[in-house]
Image 1 (cartoon, rainbow, N blue to C red):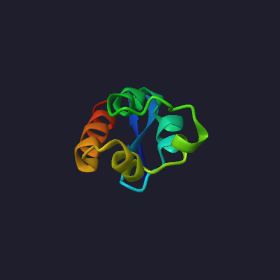
Image 2 (cartoon, rainbow, N blue to C red; image 1 turned 45 degrees about the horizontal axis):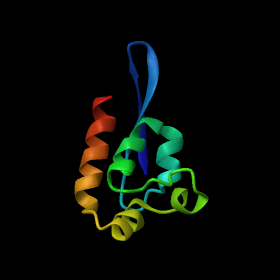
Image 3 (cartoon, rainbow, N blue to C red; image 1 turned 90 degrees about the vertical axis):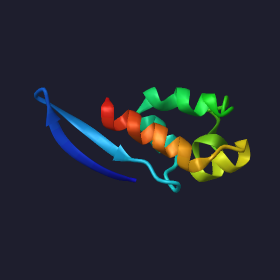
Image 4 (cartoon, rainbow, N blue to C red; image 1 turned 180 degrees about the horizontal axis):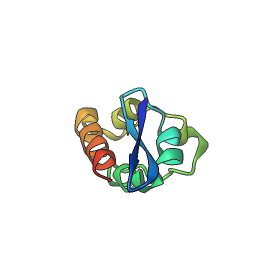
Length: 81
C-alpha cells in the first residue's frame, strides 16, 4: 500500500493506493468509510479477525468478485474524498 501526504484546506490528508496485496484491516483502520465497498461484495464479517487479515485479492476470490473492479472503485473513492 503506497501512501502520500498533502495539505488540503490546511489539514493533512493521507491518500492511499490500494493494491491486491493490501490487507483489509489496514484499509479499514485508515479509511473506515470504505466499509460499504466490502459489504457490497458480501463481506459482512468485517469485524472478524480472519477477514481483517485477508488481502483484497483473497477476499475477492472468496466472494467471486472482480478484484480490479473493486480496486478501481475504492481507489477512486479515496482519491476524491
